[in-house]
Length: 154
Image 1 (cartoon, rainbow, N blue to C red):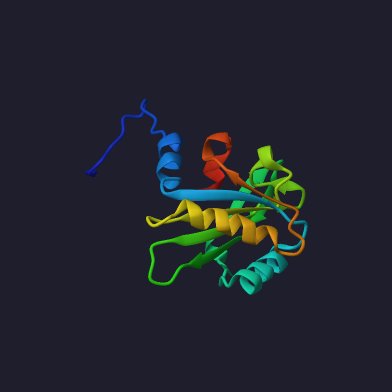
Image 2 (image 1 turned 45 degrees about the vertical axis):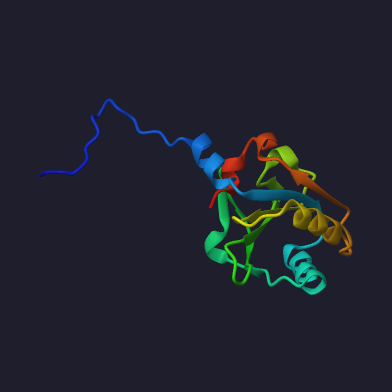
């Protein structure tokens, strides 16, 4: 039997998570949000108050296995019309576990990716999110401070 690619049995292939994360977070903006409400209610407020159209995308749901249990973290998605920019809203908590355990105080993570990201727009967005009822805190995050950034990569 012939194969196009074979790996010697003594050689292990390893995924370079650091390069993968670096590429994923290129042209992106991330903010952490404290809002102790259910994800669907928070998303509804974002859609109503800020004019977005976030929808849950079950195919993007993140599954982590911890303590011999599976935990599922929902992801909502919004693509800006006529643009390459898209938004992902991650639920950081599920049944007492966290997508990013180093940020247990955050309820949601909002990632914006796109070639046309403008700093002024992100500052305005942070101010707008702060006006949503139930939002207690919004802060810009840098991916360098995130230990488990591979959990956000889709």
